[in-house]
Amino acid sequence: MAVRVQDYIGKKVYMIGIGGSSMSGLAMLLKDLGYEVSGADNDRSKKTAHLEELGIPVDIGHDPEKVEGKDLIVYSAAIHEDNPQMRRARDLGLPRLERAELLGQLMLGYRDVICVSGTHGKTTTTAMLSQVLVECGQEPTVHIGGELPAIGGSTLLGKQDVFVAEACEYSRSFMQFHPTVGVILNIDEDHLDYYKDIDEIESAFADFAALTPADRGCLVGWGDDPRVRRVLENSGRKHRLYGISPANELRAEDISYDELGRPHFTATLFGHQLCEVDLSVSGEKNLLDALAVIGVAEMLQLPMSRVAQVLSEYRGAKRRFELTSETDGVKVYTDYAHNPAEISTAISIAKHQPHHTLWAVWQPHTYSRTKTLIRQFLKETFTEADRLLVTDICAARETDPGDISSEMLIEPLRENGCDAHLTPTFDDAERYLREHWQKGDLVITLGCGDIYRLNDQIARHGDTGSKKKD
Image (tube, rainbow, N blue to C red; front, side, top):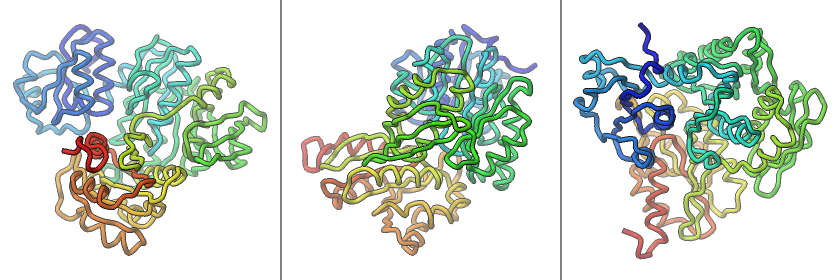
C-alpha cells in the first residue's frame, strides 16, 4: 500500500537531510500541520539552528539508532540508499516517503495549486508570486526553496484554497505534483547527470505541463524561449505566453531602467494595458519573472493595480543578490546562482550597481554539472566580472570522479579572458580578497552549496585589522 503522509498526523516523522532548502521548509509545514517532526543533517547551519529554535530537534550526523521508534521517514533526493539511517529504516521496515512525493501529497485538496518550474528563476518567481497572493488576500500555503522575509521564512500555512510551490525538474521530481496552474520560466541545459540531453529535458517539461487538468488546467510560460513556447502550444491546455517580443500575448512594453538597472514597464495583454510596474530589484530577468507573476495573477483574476503595487514592494529572497555586509568599504553580496544562465544574470545585476572592481567568487556545484556545462562556464558566464576567484567544487550528493577539479578550470578561464585565480578554501578566498580589494569594489559569491559561509565569515571578521578579526 502506498504511504500517505496524512495517515501520520500526530505521529513521529523523521527527516533525513532536514537542513536542505526544501526539506527544512517541509519540516516547518509538517510541524504546523500537527506532525511530531525531527531529523538529521551532516552539518549544523542557519537552517538547522532555526529549526531547533522552532522546537524541531536536529541530529548532526546520521546515527542509525536515531530512526528507531519513528513512524515515518522522509528523505531528500540527495540521500542515497546506503546512508546508515536509510539502511536502518529499511531493515526496520519503516514507511518512507521521498521529499517530492511528500510535497505532492500536501498539495492534494487545494482548489488552486500553482507550481513554478524552469531551469532557473524558480525561487525568485515563487517568492514574488507568494508575496502577491498574500497581499491580495488569498491566504496561500507556500513552499519556497529560499527564504522570503515578507512571509517570515520559506513556508506559510494558509487556507485550503491556494498552494504555491517551486517545481524542480531534477530527477523529474515535479512529476509528483498536482498543478492546476503550471508555470514554465525557461528550459536550458542542466542536471545532465540525470538527463541525456536538452531534448530529454524539454520532454520532461512537456510531461509536467500535461499534469494540469485538461478541463480547467492552465499554463504560463516565457514565449521567447522556443522550447517553452513549443511545450505550451503542444500541451492542449489553456495557456498564456509572456515576454518582450510581439509574438507574446502578455508583454512588457515601454521598458526603461534606472541607474541601478531597476525596470519600469507597462504590462499589456493582447495590446491592452493591465498595469504599470516599477520594480525595486534589478535586471531583465526580474522583469520577466514579474511578467510570469502577472500572468498567473491575471488568470486568477486578481486586481492588477494591487498586483503592480506589491511587485514594486518586492525586495528579493534570501541568497538572491543578497547584501550580506559592507566590509572595508566593499559591498559583499551572495547569490544562489549555480548554472551558467543564472550566474550570468547575477553578475549582470551586480554590474549595474555602483562599483570600481567587480569581484566574482564562484563555488562550482557538483562534478557532473561542472563537466557537462564546462564550455558555457569557461566561455560565456563570467565575461562581465572584472576578477574571478574559484573555490573547490562543492561535491553535494556526488563522489569525486578524479577527472575534474577547480584547478583545471583556471588556465582555460584565463585563455577566455577571465582574470581568474584559484582560492580552494573560503579562508583562501577571504585572504585574497582582503589583500586586493579596494574601497568601492563589489563582491558577489556564487553557488548553491555552502559558499554563503564565506559571506558569513567576512561579515563576522569585520573590517581588516579590526578587533573582530580572528
